[in-house]
Length: 139
Image (cartoon, rainbow, N blue to C red; front, side):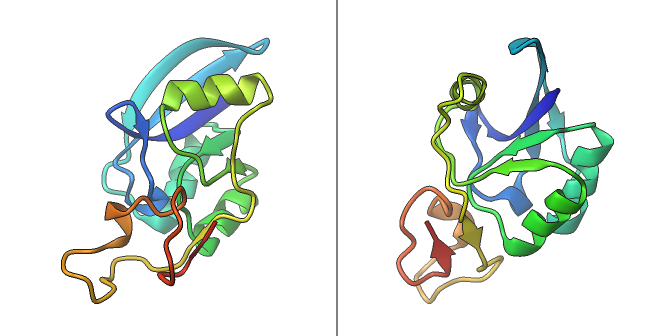
């Protein structure tokens, strides 16, 4: 089994569609046997599900993720664990121990626009792991 995690300097990147890297874990018999960090080569929301399918990913762990990307992952047969924050390695170990804290109802529907606040965009406030007020995220 292969598990992908949105990756930013060891932490779970909080906006699936803007992730530049995934950390991919190969798991056999419930144990991590190898890891690698791969670049997405600028793929956007729609292309990322295809990118993960090409990598033979079974499971994705991420922070915020929009409904369209969730559907693309489901269509690719990739199980989603969204609304997760913190260490990539910690999240995968928690998943393997069956105690990953995730949000099955995670949504992020405010991509690439500001909310009237100076410099405030979805990627800068941790969409998916923090309450976003009335910015369109459900946690």
